[in-house]
Length: 445
Image (cartoon, one colour):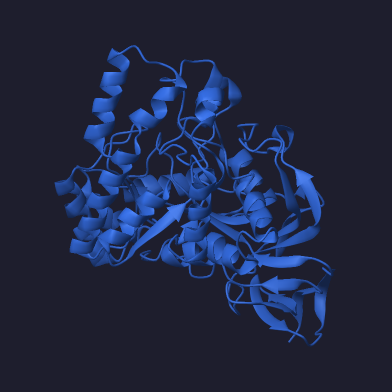
């Protein structure tokens, strides 16, 4: 058979192994991984490079349509493509997708503006539980649920959370749970404000480790009772992972993000709202940092995401700490930081593929994403491991225009990104947007 594309000479890394083979593409899908040389319409000489599946970032906030000044689809997905992220799952708190009609309208509104393939999460709403099944059938990838009222989203109490999990368990629909105890965070905020506290040092007391632990225990208990598939979002500390494991919930998986592997709690005092995200960074020692990386490597942490929730420097700094928006930009830098970690032996390249491509794609039902098996979408990235570079605000493509990792030197440079066999980023340039909507596993066509 004639192939559309052959990529020769790279070390091809999957979640299971690495090998020196050619990758062949036909009709936008992986057609073969073989030593033997076959004819192809186009060939790429990738000698000296590493070939990985395109990254799958399942926790992304593009902010439109409510807050386009913070981020929009054009900038955000261009940043993803340049970072080797070929598929995202997006959910925007300011413009939540709560019904099937909301999802269909959002897909139509995004249209042809996305540089990468995208799925959409639904927002679970306590008084809209009857909307869950129709939204799942319309193609939502998962349901985002909060245990506390934050970002303008209503929180779930134990009764409503159990009712939601009973419905999603029957459907086989995963939930992503933001775990902070509503009562504890609300009482802490009231006390801190009453005391006249307004500096960044309030963050750890307001969004405390204890509030995260309490909510994780509750979510784990209810997930176990209902047998619902649930991911704990942005696990911030080894003790949170231990609490989740202790809940021993069938189907409970853990997500973490670079900010919980690399940033320290004491940075908020110096940098203020530039470190305002929640749960906040909690690491205070090298031992805690090593423990977090161990949880990646021993499989306790199921997958990684960026939790890309950007704001511009002006939006972060022109108001007092209480009013500054939560969140960090991350879509530009997560892959760079994790590639650097792999090349510096904090984890293997196979583990990187597993955590930031294959496992998140499979948990959320994106069956042709995150892998390089025959029949998978031919989404892949080429990395030059010999190049070191310094992350900088000036190189950020996200509308935020800055990164908390400015000045950090990393090993490895992304040479090219391919989406369904088509180069979407190469030689520092982006191709025209060509991303498509990827429905979740419950989609009823």
